[in-house]
Image 1 (cartoon, rainbow, N blue to C red):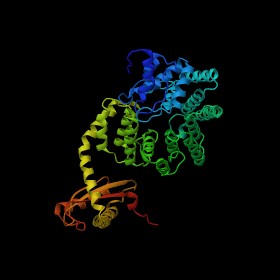
Image 2: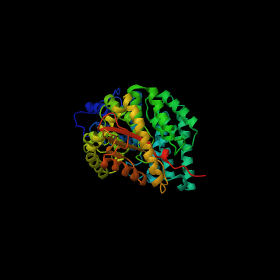
Image 3: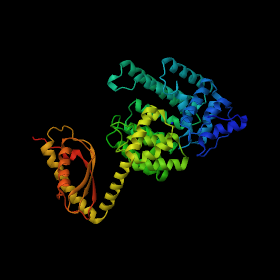
Image 4: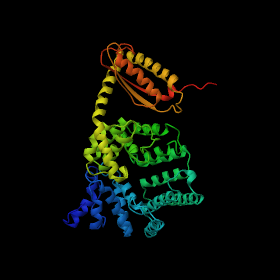
Length: 482
């Protein structure tokens, strides 16, 4: 699942245009070699560490230079960002954002018309004709054809796409592949060439083995270009070409192979893509702890990024079990710099921020309880007690399945329980993160023990003892009679 420049002389202005967005990363750009105008430089010089709009302004500047048909300036800009492997604050590759600007027929969130697509393709075709040795022109043209293919297909399920839509989708994808194959013969190489070919592999339904081979080739060319990992992680989702768990295994494998902070940063960047984790039901089950480590490592290495802050806040608010405590630390840092592509609207952003603020104190208390429970269970005595407790808990739950589970049709999903026990094994406090008639039955049993101070479990190692369980409903599904 992204500026005002004081007019203090053209030379200094050009220097700002090359360094302003990347103050936290290594820069090798020569400010004097590209004939960037003052107005274009202003769009390229925003500071993403404090202004979320800097990214849109950067892309908009690239789009504007293309619209003005300043092809030599575009080649110079792309060549220097590419050869210098320049990053923006937070670790975004600058060359990727150049292409993001070149690919957009209209600014986000406007919807492009056929006339918009035609004008953009004509400009790029003219660039290719005027500068036939430009790798940037050809790759940009191919990427636009791929975007144009998806415009024909639409965003609906496959069975909702018309036959004419599929025909255009296939024709435009084939044209993009042809352009990329022609571009592969040029002397200059570009990391975004592989991004284009990965999009082709998805559109044309390549085998997983062939798509993986393309990823391996791309990674050898530029090991830290995280877009490659994002795209294959997406391709391996069950809704496309993978099996359940394939995306999770792949992301862990490549992050472990890279190792250290770089591996964690790669893990975060994959998770941060809205098309990998979308806040929907089929999100991959990635490690939230590692996502957080990667975000923090990226900030340490590449500096603060308003885009990364928005993405980690979104993940903390929507992903997995959610983490209101962590999100509550991030939202104040975002302030008014909310990202439209992440939150869709200011209203949605504000509602989530308010909800997080309200639930964070209780979530912090729950986390302290969980940490206490984990500390106890890691002792030999605690491990033995947890096994005995869980055996009794499962028996209680299974009995409720027999008495109250007849009307339940879906036995899916994992859930967490927390139980606080008195010295004699009576329930003092409890929580069950699930719902339904079986949970109601179990809650009644626990509440009775609480009210009567009657032992329901074996006596714990000490009073006020917390036990955490993580269970799966699939393990309690009734066995159908033959």
